[in-house]
Amino acid sequence: MAPAKPKILAVATATPPHYFSQSRLAELAGYRDAQRGGFFANSDIEGRYLWLDPANVRTDESAEELNDRFQRGALELGRAAALSCLERAGWSPADLDFVATTTCTGRLCPSLDAHLIQDLGCRSDVQRVHVGDSGCASALVALQQAANHLAAFPGHRALVVAVEICSAAYYLDDRLESAVAHAIFADGAGALALGTTGDGPTLIEHRTLFRSEHLDAMGFTYPGGRPRVILSKDVRRIGAAMMKEMTAALLASQGLKKEDVVHWVLHSAGRRVIDQARRLLALSDEDVAASRAVLRRYGNMSSATVIFVFEELLRRTQPVPGDWGVMMALGPGFAAEGALLRW
Image (tube, rainbow, N blue to C red; front, top):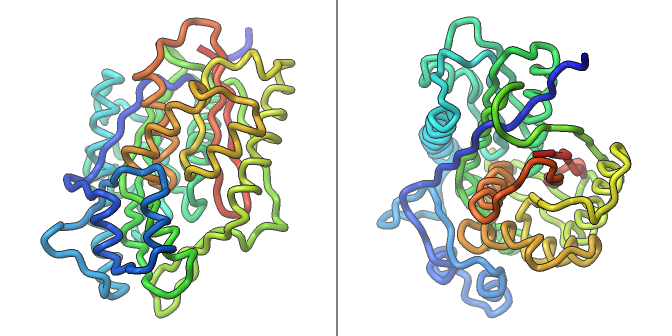
C-alpha cells in the first residue's frame, strides 16, 4: 500500500492594521509625474495593507530602521497567521513536528522559524527549515519542503508560514522599476497546515522550473545596505510563459488535460502577468477571479500572496472530491514553482 500523500488541512492569513489607498500611497511616495502616478492608478489595486503608521510615514528610513520595522512586522504577522491556521486545523503548537518559514524582505538571525517556535511554544524537538530569498515563489518552495518531510514521516504535522514586509524594502530613486514596485507590493502573512490524514486537497505533484538566462530579471540589490527591487518589464512575458510550461509539466505527470483542472491558484504578481497567463493558458474570467480579487484588495505580498489566493478560492468556491487544482507562483532565478492538487 502506497504511503498517504500530504494534504493541506487549513489555511489562514494576516495583514497589518493599517490600509492605504493607492492614491494616498502615490502621494506619500512623492510621485508627481503622470507616468509614475499611472503605475498606481492603472494597477487594478484599490489599496494595500502596510506595516506603517499612517501618521508617521517616512521615505528616508535608514537600513537599520527598515530592518527593525521588518522584524517587528514579520514576527507579529507571522505569529497571527500561524495561530489562526493552527486553530482552524484543530491543533496546538505542541502538535507540530515540522515548521517551514519563508521571507525575502528583511533579515533575522536566528531566522524566522526559530522566533516562531519560541513565540508559539512549540516542542523543543520540532524540526524546521527557513527558505530565504526565493522571492514571490518561496511559499511553494517551503510547501515543497513540508511535503517532503511528511513523505518521510507520514504521521507528522507540519506548518508553513510565509510573511513579507515589502514596505521595508523601499528605495526611492529615479528608476521606473522602483516606481512600479512601490505601486504593487504590500505586506502580509499566510500559513498552511499540512498532514496526511484529514480533509483537504492532496498535494499530488510538485515541480520547479528554472530559466537561469533570466537570472537578472528580478531580485534585490543592496546599495548602502538598503534593499532595492530589481523588476524587469520582461517579467510579465517570461512569467506567463513559464506558467504555461509549468502547467503542461504538472498535467503531463498525471496524464491530465487543461480541461480537467477546475481550480486555479495563481500568484497575483500584477495585472499584466495575470492577463498574460489567462491568455496563454486560455483561462476564463472565473478561473482567475481569486487572483484578481487578491490583487485588487491586497496588492502583491510577495511569497504570502499565493496563500491569500488559495484562501480566496476556498471562500469563493466549494471544491468537491475529485476536483483537480493547479497552484503556481513566480520568483527570482527566474523560477516558477508549482503544485498539482486533488480534492
